[in-house]
Amino acid sequence: MANDMQSIKRRIKSVESTKKITKAMQLVATSKLRKVRKQMDELRPYYSKTQEVVSEILTSNQGMVESPYLQENRQGKTVYIVVTSSLGLCGGYNANVFKAMSEYIQVEDEIYMIGSKGASYLTHHQIPYHDQYLHLNTTLDFKDVIRLVQELTKRYQNHEIGSIQMIYTKFINNLTFQPYVMKLLPVDTKNFEKKSLTHKATLFEPDPQTVLNDLIPMYLQAVVYGYLVESVTSENASRRTSMENATDNAEELTEQLLLKYNQARQTAITNEVSEIVAGANAQLGGQYGKYWENN
Image 1 (tube, one colour):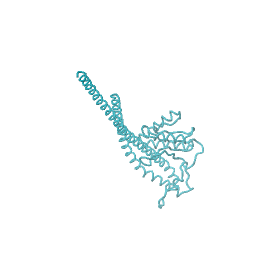
Image 2 (cartoon, one colour):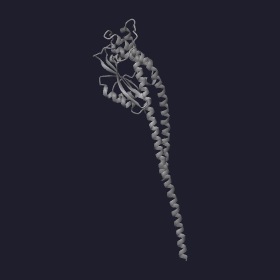
Image 3 (spheres, rainbow, N blue to C red):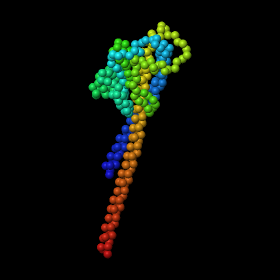
C-alpha cells in the first residue's frame, strides 16, 4: 500500500510538471497569435486596394487587355507553394495540410515547401522539393516573398510552369481553420469581375495593359504574403487550443490521482487502526484467559 501511494505521488508530481510546460506554451502561443493576427489585419488594406485596381482594369477594359499572367500555359508542370509549421504540438494543423497535398499534388508537380515539418514529411516519402524558402514561416520576411514571386512569375513567362497553386491554412476564427488550395497563376479574371468598383473613371498611364502587367506581380506578392501570415495565424491558434486542452486534461488527471491517493491513504489508515485494535483485543483476550485459568 505504501508503494502504491509513493507511485501515485510521483505521477502527480510528473503531471504537475507537464501542466506547467503546457500552460507556458499556451501563453506563448496566445502572445504570438495576438501579434500575427494584428499583422494579418494590417495587411488587408494593401491587399484589398491592389485587388481593387486590378479588378477595375479588367472590368473596364474587358477583352481589350492582354497579359501573360492571364493566359494559361498548356505546357509546363504545376508548381505548388505549401505552407506548414516548423514546430510541433499544433494539433492537426500539419496533418490537414499533408492530406490536402496527397489529394492535389501529382508526381510530376513541383513543390516549394515552407516549414520544416513539411520538409520532413516530403523527405520521409522521398518526394523532391525546393527548400530555398523553408524558414519563411518563421521569418515572415516580405523581401523573400518578393524573390519567390519573381522567380515563379519569370518561370511562368518562360512557359516552364503551367500553373501556380498555393496550399495554405485559412484562418476563420480562433477555433476554426482549414486547408485551402488557391490558384495564383494564371489569374482567374472571374474572381475580379465580381468585385464592386467605384464609379470614378480612372485613367491608367501609359496604358491599362502595362499597368496590369506591373500590378499583377505586386498583387501576387500581397496574396502570397497574406496567405503565409494567415497560415502562421492558424498554426498559433491551433497550438494555443492544443496546449489549453492539454492543460485542462492535466488538471483533470491530477484531480483523479489525488482522489486515488486519498483513497489509498484512507485505506492504509483504516488497515493500521484495524491492526492496532486486533492486536489490543488479542492482548486483552490472553489476559482474560489467564485470569479464568487461575480462578
